[in-house]
Image (cartoon, rainbow, N blue to C red; front, side, top):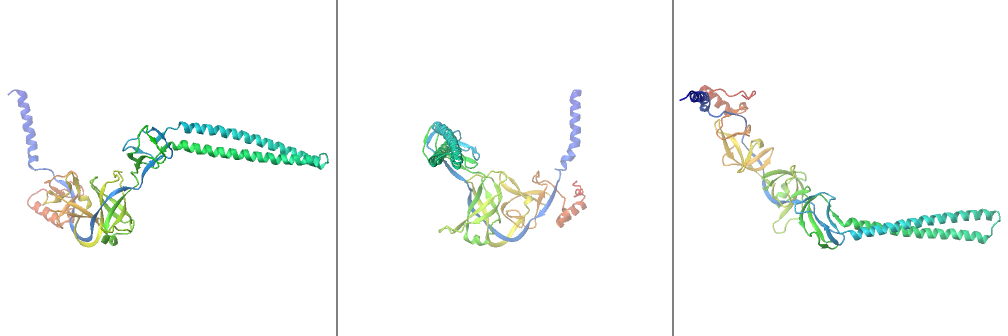
Length: 397
């Protein structure tokens, strides 16, 4: 063996000598806090099936007939309120607006001319009245001047009426031109396209169907025995949305006071808290509503619950080592989660802090051991047998 190989071998042996004792001691303990599994008598709840509903859904139609000249939206595209959805061929509408604008300008010129003529006639009448007072003009001349003023006023009124009529026609033509561009009545997404570029559409034909993704609520059907047990509007309701793999919180909007004649189910409306904006209209859901009954139930702290691809689970204290217990979350009552589990029983201890990177079989260093007599007894027994003492709860090791 050459000197270089002997040096490498010596380094490896030295490393093994240092690491081997540590490996023999097993994995390091996890600093954790525990909470007891309890049994409480609580009001029971059941799942009422339903779906997510958009409060705003519109078949956006055209108010004018025409050829579709611009339509760049596709299914799923987002639109903002007031955004142009489609533009019809508006050449004739623009020409009509230009024609009426020119007519209005001509009318305005005529009105100005008629005003000037009336002003001149009124000045002439005033002079004739002054001369009549001095006896310089006859009564017939004064009458002619007065008649001319009245005539000029009538002609001006006619010019004003023509101007008002043409302005109204111009406003109507401008509105027609604006209506050649169909705009979104609210923000949402395109879910149906009823026409394509180059097609002719008639008045009232739908162009696109859009739905709002922000004005959403849950609709579910509850049995009549749950109607009396349900709280007043504003009461909290939990909602399971399978598509998200998540339970959301909501508040009751109202109980629709009409039941299905066959099923005797009453619809309810629930406002859902969806801060991430992942809900979509049509998603199925289950709203948890009270049944009006009470029963003993197993409860745990919300902080103990973890989730993976297989579902929700917790870590529990199995004689100083962590073990996994699958759970099924039922509902929440009195700030505790009501669960069903084939493993957990009232009195067992679950990990509520320090469980994020835990793995099964890991030793537990309980930081709040003073709350649980069985943990203190176990620690005392371990120390009497020569085991190293647990870490200081305040210093966490």
